[in-house]
Image (spheres, rainbow, N blue to C red):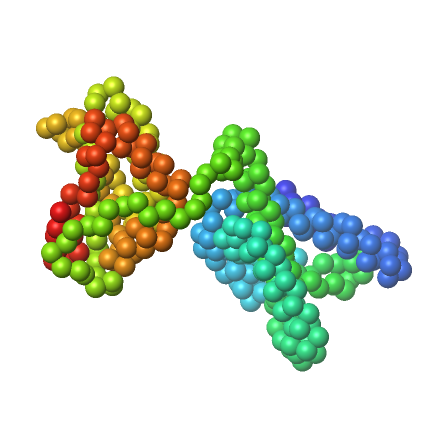
Length: 316
C-alpha cells in the first residue's frame, strides 16, 4: 500500500509540470490511464485484509481522523487525498466483506446505481456541487491533470463503491478457489421429500407453542467396533438438527458405561420443536437417523428419554 500511495503522490506532484497546456482530451487521458489506476492500487493492496471483515471499519477511523487533521492544517491537496483514499478503501472493503451471495452483490449494485443517478441529477450531490464548494472539496479526491495546477475531483464514495465490489469479488473468488480443496457435495441423489418419522413425545401436559427452551435427549447403546462409524453418522445428525431448528446439539459418551451415548439437542421453543418433527425433516434426514439406529446394538433403543420446557415440565 505504501508503494501505491507513494507512486500516486509522486505523479500528482509531477502532473502539473508535464506538458504545456495540453488539450483537454490529453488531460482526461492522463487521469483515466494514470491517476485513477494508480489510486485503485491502494484498495487492491488492502484487499487481502478483507478477511478481517467489518472490523476494517474500525481501521478506517484513524484514516478519517488523519483526513480531518490534514484539512484543518491546510494540507487539503495531495496529503488529504491520500488519507481519504485509504479511509474510503477500508470502509468499502469492510462493507463489501459482508456480502456473501451473488444476489446480495447484484442488489447492492442496482441500489448504488439508482441512488447515484438520483443524487447527481437532482439530489444531494447536485446541491453540494452547485452551492457548497467547501463540502465538495472535503468529500472528494483531487487529482492534478497533466500540465495544469487545477484539480479534477472524484467522489470518495466512488472508491468506497469500488472497494465494496472488490471485497465481494474476493469473497466469491475465494469460494471458487476452495472448491478444488473442499469440493461441493453431490446432492442429486438426496431425498428432499418431507418425512414425518419422529415419535410424538409423551408429556405430562401440552406446552404452549412459545414456551421454551425445549431439551430433547436420544439414547443409544453402541458396541465398541461400531463406535467410530456411529460418531461419524451422529455428526451428520447433529447438522440435520441444527439445520431444522435446534439451537444446539451435542453427543455425549457415558463415562461409567462407554457403550452408552446420549445426544442432547435444545430448541428455542416448543413450537420450533414441533416444526422440526412435522415440517422440516426430509427423507435424507430420516436416512441419517436410520443409519444411526442401525449402528446401535438395539436399533429400537433410539428414544426420547427426556423433554423439558424451561425446566417446568418433563416427560418420557
